[in-house]
Image (cartoon, rainbow, N blue to C red; front, top):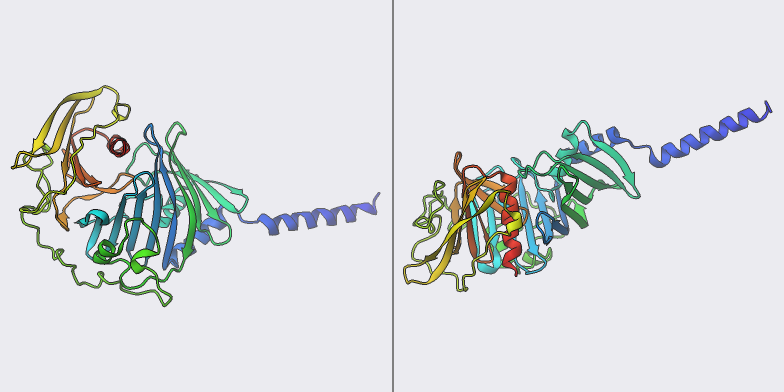
Amino acid sequence: MLRRIPWIASVVVLFVAVLSACGGKNSDSVVKDLSKVSDNLESYQGSGEMILHTGQTPLTYKVEVWYQKPNYYRIALTSAERDITQIVLKNDQGVYVLTPQLKKSYRFQSDWPDNQGQVYLYQTLLRSISIDNSRQFTTDKDAYVFDVMASNYNNGSFARQKIWLDKDDYAPKQVQVTDTNAQLMVEVKFTDFKFGTKFDKSAFDMKQNMDGASGTGSAGNASGQTDGTASETPSGTNGDTPSGTDGDTPSGSDGGTDTTTGGIDDQAEGMADGQGMVPIDFVAVEPDPDALPEGVSLHDNQDIYDEAGVLNGVMYRYTGTYDFTIVETTQRDVKDSIMSGRGFDLGFTLGQMFGVDTQTVTWTYDGVEYRLTTADLPDDAIVKIAQSMVASSGK
């Protein structure tokens, strides 16, 4: 029996060594590695699918993300149901929201995405993991899984998020964001993610993305990649200002918006005068009743007509627990409007928020501009209402 003890001890030591070699990384060691990845991050390109579960009907989007150091971003969000693409672009001139199919663009100065997180941005995920000292860690087949707080988003209903990172290179594989009741709110599944992508000089240029994008959000269009070295200064980010974006406010716009009423008289704010209407029939879209906060109901609504007497908008007023106004108008044919608000993540696009005590959130979708004005509606309620209107607009 005594002779067998050394042999048993050897087996135990060997077994422990095998376990250490196969799965030795713990939370602290992975977080340390992620800090090095973040410090050395030069560029990446990712694509996948995002599903928003905030309404009765899930909204599905194809997502494509480009990043190049130091601070250039291109995010294409394409509605799977309606094949509508919007591009969020950041270069040296500012942050743009582009709708290539309609040749529409809005530009505003902002420190986005530093001031708020985006669930599909790699930097946001790394930041979420690093700042949560109570993070939970486990492994799942070929991925490391972190369960952390979701505190770096403007949606206050987000509580926690699970983040799957590839064991080989820490590339993101999947993200799930849940609310305080552990109900799934947002999920992103990456089908492809590559570090060190080489982009050509036009990849983050506003004009190239407006003219070259096919409107499908495909990575291969707009000649965004190159087999050469990564461009240090992409075209449109070298200090030259694109046509129509020289910092002068377009005619008929003061660069901002009236945030006190959201009324009818200021609907051309931020749009160039003398331009034609978008050649589409206006169809009013109401928020899904289930998306309204408890105790809120429609007070009244009023049609909006242009100078020729053609219906081109509607205003809805809601009262109750919270008071707010929603104004919808067809967009005028202006290629670059300069806005003075801050970025506001709506999930399906990046909106703009203006004001302090009374706030107005604006966004565009399928040729229609939406404005929601309120003094007391919470941010997460604004997001839920906006997403319900996008879902309704496709019906």
